[in-house]
Image 1 (spheres, rainbow, N blue to C red):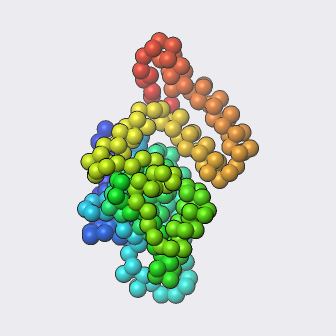
Image 2 (image 1 turned 90 degrees about the vertical axis):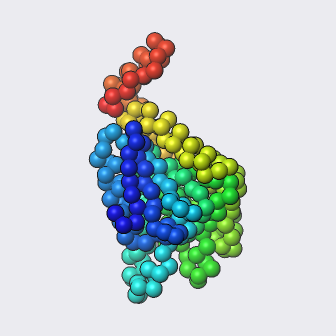
Image 3 (image 1 turned 60 degrees about the horizontal axis):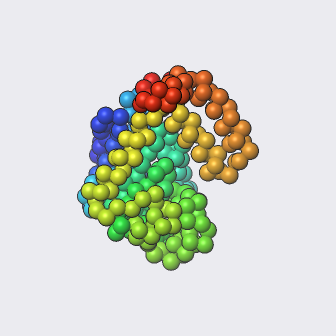
Length: 258
């Protein structure tokens, strides 16, 4: 692949963005992200995924140079719609995806990170949606995801001023789950979380992620109904019975992902 690489260690997969110098998101990179998801979806050994950037940044934004090659309103709308489809897939993926953010996650880079289930940032990372500085608006659903995490007033401030916040602030506002003092601590925290998730039953994890989609979309009644259904299925599954028995016997469960 030209813009990223992916690899697997144990039960954790890694997507490494490699579009120097800023890991700018372009259409070919988004396509490669989609292909990496295909790979990890089909590999039963992979039970959690970390997305991170090579070099100085996670991703400093969309590839502005690509914008100069796109002609016409409809073409730009299609570019945005394509990115949204891939990022929606990340958000709805059946395996946990963690963004490990250092340097900067701006514009499209932040939109990619916001689609992930969990975000870990360095204290000094810069996160924001600066599109209005260019006379544009976010194109990959950033205007819709950002208010979910920080609320509408703070999202309005970030959008309308184009001013980023740092990693510490992102964790305080709920845009990130945790912040880290260094890149080394960032990687350690991200993979520690991924390994914890990967140690769970893949069936239960998939169900939990599905249920979070209902909560994300404020569908309480439908989500509650689905929860009782999946609760029953989990209880009847091999892993559900194994987990209960392991608890009674005070041992670590041996999940078989069915």
